[in-house]
Image (tube, rainbow, N blue to C red):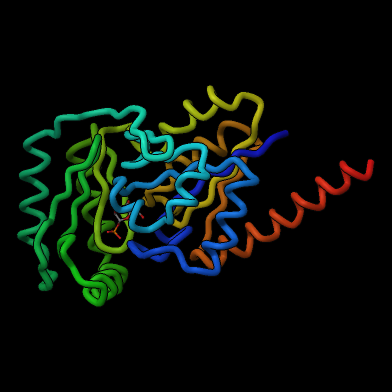
Length: 252
Ligand code: M1P
């Protein structure tokens, strides 16, 4: 059975909001030329373009951005879904930002993307060292988890998930990464899907896709990784096994 590989980007293929590392990049561009690959990221297209080199973007079968609300083939936007966000939700988020005890503020707290809004207490203009500081503070005090819980209670028509290090992603219910599986199954019937992501915990933004992948078929796999190094190690063994299989077929 043919395997289709799906990858989250931040934390799975690249460090959060950074470029792919050189060693991984060389190997992964070979991998994408030999195996069918899709990217499924919560980020928008400009961020993905900064993080993954063009030879890898162009070798992929397709790219889902904004949690699957946009679909691209190479650099062509094939389709997108739009949503008008509830004003009450946005004013609640503004109050949450104002009331947070976290002191470091850098501006740009909202980023509206196709079908989702990314919300950050410290703000998206945060420098790298500020990112790390907020991430560690949030792990200790659970601010994002608390935001996720209270929004789920008051705005059940929306799904809220932890983004990467400094934000939460808010989208209409069902407009999560899970939406990509239906389309992939239409394009690739009789295939199995293997998804790599680093945010498969209960409130992570890879979890909805992992859940539908597991529920769809026991041939599918959703693999939770710690970081891009672990993804690389796993892909290297898949690559070696794939080559061994091809050799066996040639010798048969
Ligand atoms: O891992 C994907 C996430 O990357 C960014 O998260 P953060 O800025 O919190 O590290 C955002 O683009 C977020 O929307 C996205 O899900």
